[in-house]
Image (cartoon, rainbow over all chains, first blue to last red):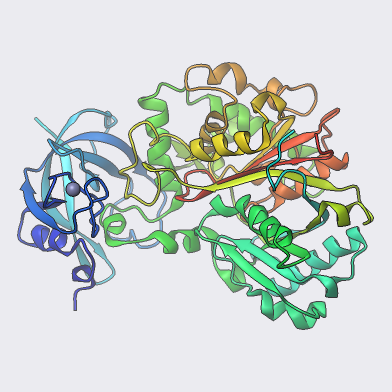
Length: 134
Length: 390
Ligand SMILES: [Zn+2]
């Protein structure tokens, strides 16, 4: 059983498994709605549609982790985690970024993503790895 | 003067604090809590069997009904907790306790937090377990330090707040801790190089930017203002309390409103608190500030109107933050960084001691003290205490 299929964001995880970024928007007023929920508070409509977005984003903020926290054993430290604002929808996603070291990531810079996974224990969690757009 | 029902109608009548090194508590967690409650009652001169209400926060594991045999509780009539896994609910717990008293549901309420590693595990892990999901795990984000680091990075890099500001807050905390016999930093001369050369945890945070956990327990006894005046210690009144979140803040997987993202989440709470009490930042004589991480302490001061992104450097200065002559004394017992960190319960206890004139770093003429809960939590809270109903 895959616990990622239990929540309102199941199509997001299924999308990543199939190599696509799917995000939810209100089926009535088309407002992007993340985290995924049940009802659009802007128009009162219940129900979302999932639309594919290209893996393009801008960097909203970042941290480079040096401490070996539990559950990060599969990641070589240091590693960079970011908040990426997906192009043309304003949805922010947490993800990882190819470390531009010795330079630092820069807020506002353009990013291109690829779909990979983060191993936590035995679980391969789909993950978006962003890198600087060349 | 305001007619708000919370204004000056309840008061802290006693406090108790037991603090030890992490993993070094000589007693089980619940026994530490019982001792802290007994201390609080003894200060007040109130029989612990008369305590009939309990309020906690931050997923405390000590269900009040289990305390009854040790305390001799005759009738437990009220037990509640503020939602949220972090320290955001600490000040809100006083609002919940006051609501119980003012509505006649309880008459003597203990606000508490107890934490010993053997019983509750690492607090940071417990806080994160409250929030963890696969979105966080996939990004390698598993600790409060990382989540707060990302917000701090935006504060510094996008909003232009000078990262060096946090050093003044840290220095002031250690300055106060140095003279407080109960503080982890007691008797130590803190050199800021210790922070600057400490190892990276998650950029922009080094080890000494982060509060480090202690074992222990703290308890505060809240009763009606009228009853407090008959007890042994001078009352420390609750003047106001606000908690919660506004639209655009909360548990939003980093999708907070753009103008709220690099804050502690207090803007609406602070606004409500000042409206409730009729007070403004200029009326606050000292601040007990929950600083899980130093940058979040800076955000908290900004949220509560003590400064802005633009003029933070003028206000957050060592000389201005210390009890000895500063206009905005902060964390006068050392705070989470230098007094010790039992999920923040030391902060309201110092607020009470400060307003009684018992602090190791007394603020001359202090009448009011603001308590700000854990910044960055989805649900946050603040309260104002005073030694007189103004
Ligand atoms: Zn809608």
